[in-house]
Image (cartoon, rainbow, N blue to C red):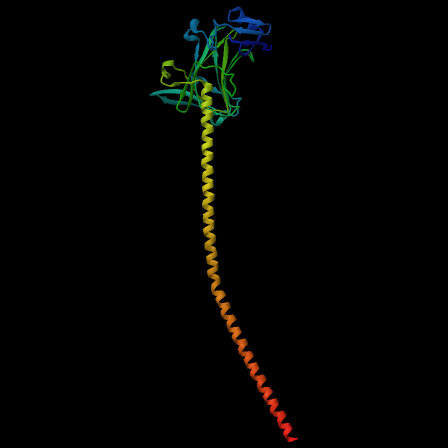
Length: 320
């Protein structure tokens, strides 16, 4: 059997798909009306404008509260990174489930027994921090006895097709939201609730009443995302400027150091060369004096030889 009937909320927004048999059951019970042969619309007697259950006919037994101990890591998700924690908030110890450490895809699940054709709501709180990645997401799926029969509720993702929380508050380090996910059991006698995150980290808590969060600032999810994105971009810009200034200053500083070092090297080399230059100058002067002395000595010898030759010539003349 294929889920080929589109389900929309009272505003016409598509919320998922279901089986023809389940669609007929919703119509027969007055929880939906037929739009056309392949589409049904959930009615306001079950859902409010925020796509949240009308709880007038619901009892506390129909509210499925989150309990960390009831959830386990899904074995088929090999990248699981999750831990049950006991944390203290406002002097109260609370058990929560931390999932998605390091952005690893993580999935936890719990099986729940149901009464047939009964309205339920799964209620929980989630704390998370801003993640810029377009592929980061978190979602909850409620799957019934039959394979591929159930609903999916997107909580975080880059586009605007998300399920609206009943409480959305800004915290010192992120966002706190309380969700109440409505569903009808139809013919099912049980379901599996799966919570999955991918690319982000989340802390899942039992939800408290609205009064417990009264001191926190109300915020629209999309507004919060834009504020956090702007803050992140500014931080990156400031860091980039600081790094640039630091590198520029470092390069200028290195230039001065290299310049001073070059001057020192030049001076040292120059000083080292001076004795050698002086020595060469001295050696040159001595060589010149030697040459001059030799020249004078040669000249004197030439004069003596010439005088001797003249004397011999005139001696020969007188004898003849």
